[in-house]
Image 1 (cartoon, rainbow, N blue to C red):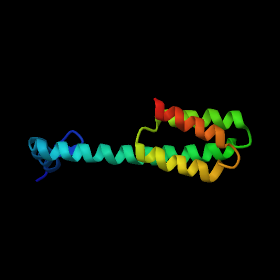
Image 2: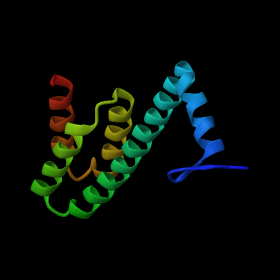
Image 3: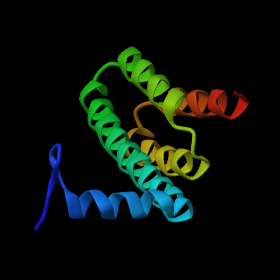
Image 4: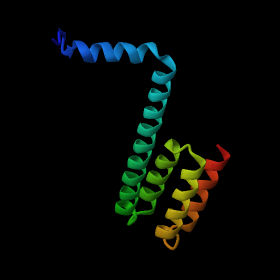
Length: 109
């Protein structure tokens, strides 16, 4: 018979306790889950940023402001490189100086 412990069934509760006792397993699962969540968040934020940049590309000051905001939270070197390439392809003919200056500032910081 399965007993209930709060909202958890007894068998699930026991399984959970076994996992907690195996700290290496638990730590590796937590770390891999956090890495996955961070990657998903980064991808989502980048996609949102790209949409915003496309929508504000009619105005140089708005474009510069949004580009600088995006570069504040992107920390991964590989993602910065990909994002820079995307910006050059999409907006290089419109705002080459803004893009160049923004990414140079990011490299300095």
